[in-house]
Length: 138
Length: 109
Image (cartoon, rainbow over the protein chains, first blue to last red):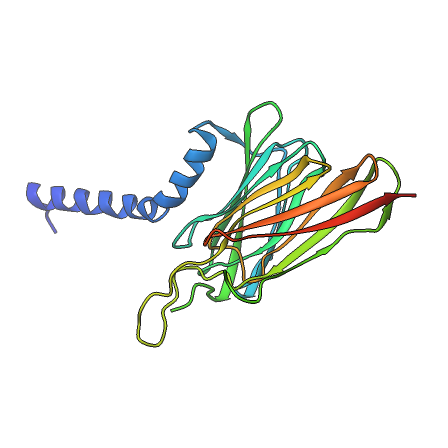
């Protein structure tokens, strides 16, 4: 099979579209994260995210975040129609910079937690949760 | 105001000074996400609690922003330091402008 110049161009274009697509799905999640971090780089030390590997019911998925010394933690569900989940801001009377809550997940996806650490840097942790029944209704 | 909203908070009655205590909070609320549709296919409008704050003697413990991805009957568990006897004030802010609050006292001993 020989490729004409036109075929080659079309193939290249198609490949470009395919590689860009997964990013556009997560664009909304990236926006939420960028608003929180201001586009700063994220390390991966100093934050723990505990989420189940498999959630039978996407309506209530227990998650726990913990980041010692952090002033704020942002929780994002990258595959939800509205990716933002919650933002915890810890005050001076907080006993530890950790919290747990229950969230809705629309389907199998990555849950991401980002902490703003005491020195102003950001740390990120993510965990993939398999969801059997989605939690966003019709 | 959304109907049937009832806050429930579990705080130890007593703690030693400087102790870190675990607090569990729950408020009954339907947390309508704005994604669901009714039988006619119309979107049910969003109605959630969008903010939850906890203060101890006027100082912030936790200020949490909630999005529609928080489950029905939002449950939050966290830890707080108790340097002295005092009151925890829990406040929930509803989308429709309602504010629900409850207070729990902690004694030292």
